[in-house]
Length: 271
Image (cartoon, rainbow, N blue to C red):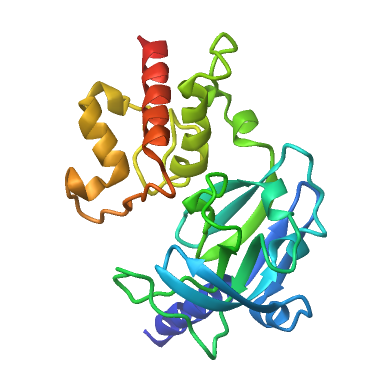
């Protein structure tokens, strides 16, 4: 019994230690940063943001994401896959993370073990957004998806773009450049793929696959699907519901229409 208890305690401590290490990697190399190391970095500073997760102004000790990516090699079209300890995973254009400015851009906030952040809203176990959290000081522009505010961060990995990694998402070349179908694909990648796969393509595991066995447009009335994308709780409730409501600032009505257009396009391809 004592051996079993010691093993469980040791494993718990190992998981805590792992969670307080941020791995930054590209295709050839990898570096692990500890909380202590990042807090002591000269580039780390106080950063105040209009936090869309905590829904209030927050001040963090944070380091510019561009500084963390200095050691990595990125191509023009590369993305950075941000992976969290709770299996959340989102691909962020590397060019957005590499924008370096004293006051704007992306920062990685670092939770000081001696000064824990507040519990996340509606968190059942009172957990915070730490130990690491991507925050933004660029305003609520359409290019900065709400999903790019990746908390409980564990790793940043340089990868090919989602369009290259998962060609099954693609739109045929015959589709006009101005078609909402193309905009829908872009918004699906930026907003939905953090939690959902499509026909098995993607890394998201927190929500159902939206291509298999059926496409949502095949079993939702159009207006109900739009309401679900805006605010799932307005349509139905289910155990362990995780999908949040999206404000018009983070996902416009036109964006929702475009996502539905892309889903409809992909459904027609299978028929």
